Image 1 (cartoon, rainbow, N blue to C red):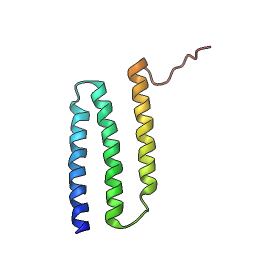
Image 2: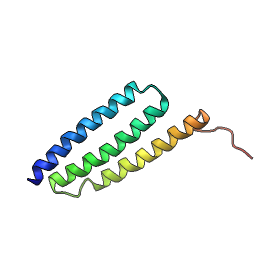
Image 3: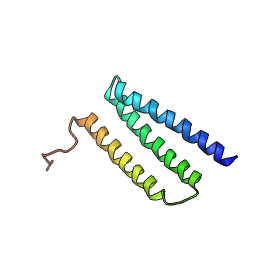
Amino acid sequence: MLSTVLMVCLILLSLALLGSIYRLIKGPSTADRVIALDTIGITMIALVAVLSMYLKTSAFLEVILLIGILTFIGTVAFAKFIERGVVLDRKRDH
């Protein structure tokens, strides 16, 4: 029974991932695309967690942490880009 529920969760999360990818491509604004990237990261974390439960292993927990860190860094970079127009400032304020 648990394996069936986990398989259904994997299918539903895959569909959510496809919907987020669609929003990433068709998003009318940059903010929509940033939210879609954030949603893709969260959905991928959930996919890996459910897959780890389905396979009865804890080997993928480091992958979850890595995806979380990369998603956070990407969100911060895009927020900085939306706010200032550049990600890295070459000029430093003194």
